[in-house]
Amino acid sequence: MLRYFLIEEYRRHTYIAKKYSLVVFPVYVLFFTLLGSIFIDEVFEVMSYRTFIEVTLISTFMYGFGVGSFEFLGRTMEKFTLVNTYAILPISAKKTYFYAFLRDTVYYTLLFILPTYAGLVIATIFTKLTLPQISLFTLSVLTSMLLGYSIAYTSFAIYNRSKVVYAFFVILVFSYLLLAYLRFIPFYPVMFQLTKEYIYLLYSYAAIAIFTFTGYYFTSEEKEYEKREHRSNFQRYMFLFRDPVFAKEMMDVIRGHIILKSTLTYFLPMVLIFIFVQVLNKVSSSHVYSPISLTIMLSIFSTVVYSWLTIMDDPAHMGLLPLAPWNIIKAHMKAHVLIVSIVSVPVVMFINMTNLFYLIPAFVLFYLNVGYLLSITAYLAGYRVTSMLFDPEIIIKFSLLSVVPGIILTISSLNLGFISVVIIIFTALIMLVISAICLKKAKKKWMYFD
Image (cartoon, rainbow, N blue to C red):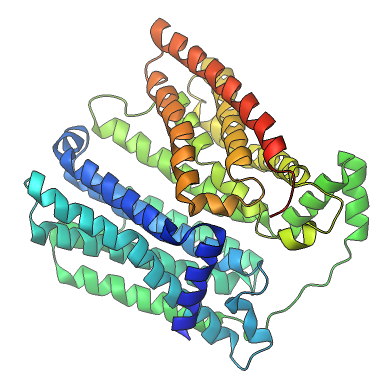
């Protein structure tokens, strides 16, 4: 059964993009791992070895937990996938989702861990790193990712049984990460990497096994389909937004629990990153990030919210309706801005609380970058935003258009002065021009459903 899950994953990616798209992300990971390894001495001048290990492994845990939550909670909203076949085939839900867990364990190991190791192996040619060092480090990274993924598996099983318990469980997980980073309690992958004592590795894999078994045990045997009357809600949204397409979009947001998922994959990790940066500012001789630069980072990662909005779309069905793809794209963009505002505004205000003078510029730059990234996404990926993750051409174009302005704004906002303000204003004007061009081209490009 695992073989069929892996075949489905391969076909899904080749359907969305091209066959060679599966090598793009591993090449990216390999390249940036190699690049980071070459400058590892400069990294240790900014932070200590322990801080570097804590940031890396806890971030890897968040990556595993984030992609695990995305896969389990996201795939359940899709139709005609193997994770939904247990309703009509003689296979239990427990086994189906366990196979999905194994599939993604294999998939993300091949996609993320092996390229990381390959990049580190190549780095031994140019640096003082040794093969035993990078092997132990890669093992720690793999362990941290699997721990996050196994906990995501458990959280999914809890989510289908009780939303209240799920919320409490997620808060507990992130509280544990916070306490571990502040060194009040141990994080076993970090302790293993720091001490090289294999007892911590044993503890880590014991925890992975426990959470995997818990996820399997608590997975509901039968899917309970919620039956709700949406007509009154649709009329309410129509009265509020005066747009039937956007009213339907907001109904999907409520039905798909998009705000909850956005909070999980966007809001909470950003809060942790803010805490990490604050600690880095304390341990380094200079400020690693300023409040405004953190706000810009927040806007950069907001793109993940857009992908949730496409989970419940069915392009084949929408192609039969009197709608153009641009109508759907506009609804996605409006919903994206609304959800990102709900989730991000409190964080932006909190980050800039120490200096209220920068609050308005921070919001201006935040929404500037959010709108800029939305216009690029609308033009390159259209209504099939998931293709952005797998199509090499889209990845390259999106990276060039998004990374360069983001880096310029982030670096320029570290120490605000006359020159940096001029650079920010000039960059902002260019971004506005590019946004207008992308939106104009997107409207012409996405006239039909493929």
